[in-house]
Image (cartoon, rainbow, N blue to C red; front, side, top):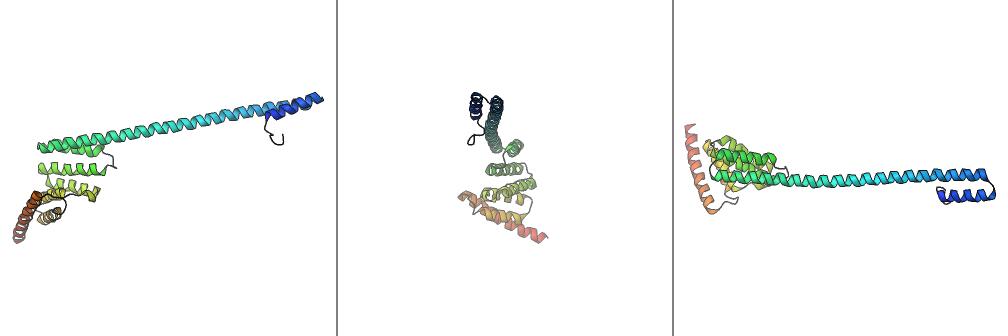
Length: 212
């Protein structure tokens, strides 16, 4: 009992010994103590079992929630990619309004973590708006793409933005875009075309300044 005061077996053993020695009342007290400890141990075991089951259930729920979250994330990305690809196809067919709708759906459903896809879709919006002659709105779309992640800025985006500025007769801004686009991955034909636009904008800017 000194070593295991909570042991029902020890109290039952003491009860048997006391009974044989003739101490019936004390034997009954020890027997009752043993029964009480047995009930407490049983209750503790049930509580521990319930606790373990709840912990296991919680872990299982979290596990399934994580799987569902991952699946939903992948589904969102795949859906956004599908809309982006549709937008590109419509752009090539010069169906600007349909392309714009696709790019906006791609952006709307794309997770914030997928920056590159969001940037591509914003650039697609800019291209669609440019095709529609909405040059001011196209510039806003290009700037939105740049603000999302400046490191994804390409020469083609800058060239397209320069075109929009030129149509709005904002030749200084157009020149900045064309000049910066040359060093950002344009191919040889693109660079030549860009230089032509630079010369054209310089000429138009001089004429504009004369009129002022």
